[in-house]
Length: 437
Ligand code: PXG
Image (cartoon, rainbow, N blue to C red; front, side, top):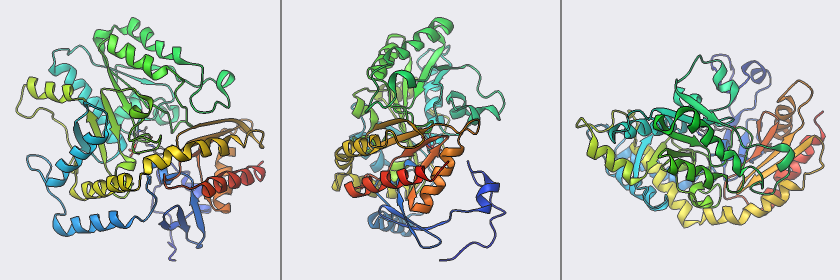
């Protein structure tokens, strides 16, 4: 396999460049559940890349669909012109998204799907005559990508602190993590539904007439996997409805089977007003994001627009034909192979295997839901994140890809994962933990 001879010019995202370049981890291939490293080792993919390769790597039918699309129509402008596949894909998404959510706006990433959702929320409130509703409410520890909108409503300190004053008029709910009451919960934790009442406090402070929307991840991922406490999402939904505030679910990781259903909304039985998705939409082969809205949002925008163009927003690559071809082939795989059902079937095995690490070296908490698990390690003194990072590196040497979010190790394998691969994931991580100080 070829090796790059100079790593210097590339500025790597969310990566300690100096450390990486001294001791790089280079991936040169991937098939099904495995990556192949440049020293020709098979690495079990415990993370579906970055929570995105839900159908596993190297899927032939997606390759063929992409290649055929490139031969037929490589690109067409999305403003004022259409191509058949973007309509077809929107219809297919409407079929599997919650009832009443039949309108889809395309973008190219989760970050853009989020920014589109926030802008749609603001424009909708204005269009229906509620133009004082301009505040956006996020949540502490939330991750909504890296656009200015997303980091403003997001709640991960490092992602915000370097970038100035961000959007104005944003407030945050408290996060839902409660280690002392909920450590080692299996699935959704028992305690914390009342944390949704924090929205009432924010309404008291700002008044509902100033609040456009609340955005949360139904299950927080990037911050270290925090399943919602039982009853929390329903309570949040009820408070939003009571005060006429839009509820946006950022489902960039939870959509497309991660919890055993097409969406987290479906899994939790809570319907938001807007859903953001990306990642698994194209099995990560071609970048694509989508913002799916309730019919009343779309209809109101069309009815009340004060200009022929109802929404002054869009990207050069909105609904790119090649991304649409990849997404349609991906949705076929999910359906034909019953991958969401396989995810539901694997969830209890993942729960059991993850929680078997209770008592292992460094472990202070274990969390899980669907095809997601997290093992939280005790930080080493003041070196927060060091132990997580070293365990991730050790796991890579042992042939396992695991994600370290600070000192939390996150697992989110492709939904094609089988029982022996689940065992292998947690056996290897246990070995890695034993070798890390
Ligand atoms: N919202 C959520 C909930 C996400 O998890 C984004 C938005 C942004 O998507 P894009 O496509 O713009 O990156 C994400 C992305 C991690 C990790 O380590 C998670 C993400 C990205 C990178 C790392 O958990 N999620």
